[in-house]
Amino acid sequence: MAFFTLAKVDKVQCGANILLSCMRRDAIRPWRSCTNRKPGTLKNMGGGLSTSRPFKTVCRPSLSSLRSPLTTASSGPEAEASPMIASTSGGSDAKDTETTIGASVWSRPKPSDNIQEHVPWSEELLFDSSASSRKIYCNRSLNMKSITAIGFDMDYTLAQYNSENFEALVYTGALSNLINKCGYPKELSEFTFDYCYMVRGLAIDKARGNILKMDRHKYVKIAYHGFTPLTREERLSTYGASKTRESFDEPGFALIDTLFSLPEAYLFAQMVEFMDANPDKIKDKSYAELYRDVRACVDMCHRDGTLKRTVANDPAKYIREDPTLVPMLEMLKQTGRKVFLVTNSLWDYTNVVMNFLCSNKVGKDTDTDWVKYFDVVIVGSGKPKFFTEETKMLFQVSLDSGLLANTDNGTPLVAVDSDEAQAPIPSLRHDPMSSLELDDDQPSTSGLPVNSRVFQGGSYSHLHRMLDVESGSEVLYAGDHIYGDILRSKKELGWRTMLVVPELNNELEAQNKQKSEEFKILRRRREQLEDYMHRLSWCIDNENDEMCPADVQECRDAVKVLEAEVDLVMSQHREALREYHNGFHKIWGQLMMCGYQSSRFGSQIKRFACLYTSEVSNLMYHSPGKNYRSSQDEMPHFDE
Figure: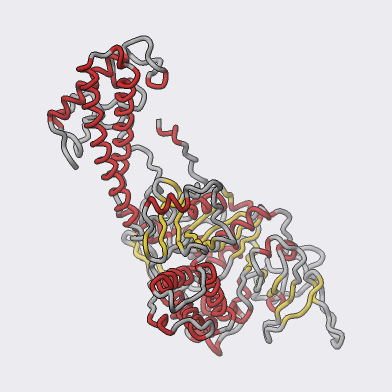
């Protein structure tokens, strides 16, 4: 921070005295006065110049008596409300089998334990539910007592993947497909993958080969061409100077709104760099065609079975174990709620993943016992169309063979060569239709036998019928995909939603390490200096006739001093803000913020996710009857 010389302070003080003399006149302009202003007092001018604390990092404390913003701090309370995400009191994250909290050690319950005796949220002395790693954050107030059915997505929701291994697997498969199936140069095999580079919430400009981060107003704050950053001038000329505003949506742009898309974005950036550096090796290809090929090769990894077979052979390498998952599901079932699973994955892969999560079974040891934790399981759902199209066919899955059986609106159809009649699917709530005899070991809330609970395809109308749901507001659905899981289910059906954000724990950890006070003070300082400079300039331009030449010159000298200081504070403010965001991610900054604004991703979370949390099993650490309450919405004038 630079200090002012006494000569500079004298010039500014002189400018301030001249400005005060101009303000004493009755003909003062409304925009630079206040109806309650006392004549001759600078602190009552608009712009918040009232102060009592010197700004020590910029000016000498001995000059604190100077009545100008160069030596005084902003008005109002010292702790101004921050536009950034507020820090949350942290706590120790739970370990694999034991968690030390205070002087106590809490052992996580096993699936066979009596759940009523081991519910963490009820053990007040053993667990602090306000620990940031286990907290559930609320955007829209939600009383869990109004929820009769709770549903989950599987991938990156119930199943949290080890990102380093899983995303590298997708990347390697897509790169191999580009070389071997799309005919790209073999030099691409030298590419390596950095799984930490890309983040959710970015947008790919297919036509230009750029990767962007935007705020909630769709202002492009950060832009890279491949791995080369665009200057501010390049950003503004590309995305801020057109006559019509970009939508930043399909088909011209691809949104990186799921963790599955991170390898795709990184590989595309590498391909852009390679094509720019080697135009003779990739001929007659546009950036859009390049992205189309990358997208197709990533899809090929998911469709040809190689990805799923690799995970199935060693699920522990790619999927994180969560010993609280089964107790959480049991807890929800014991409250009388219906629990369902709706995933886009097909039955074979779903069975592999859920076996590992619920009972740590792999290979030939897998079975279908895990189905008992759900009242309805729908695989191959085809979200987001699952939430919008009612005409999709629903098939019943045979747990023994994996084969599909036709249904008529959920009722199994008997094949022409079969003599066995099948009963219609009953409602899951107890009613005259429910005449099935259930096994003694099945929860009393379930109306379907285990071997009749798994379906493929269908739509929300089938699910509502099987769950006996009368209103979408009775359903809470948890997923990781802001568009495929959250946005459509909320906008089309009125479901209550919970977004799983696995990155949240890292964000909270970085947030607790950052100090945001410096750049907030610098921002207030910059606003004060600019306001004071503009007022002096106004006096020079509009009160020139009533000022002596010496006073005019003094004001001009003061404006020059202020201009230099504004530039200095602006530079310091930008650097402090950059350092703050770099503490979260060196390239893209804070996940849910973009400068002082919410990022596009953060804005979508606030608009469409009633709740959000780092892991779905955090439901285990809160009462199933809890009333989640949102924080007060803030507007700029609330800080006054």
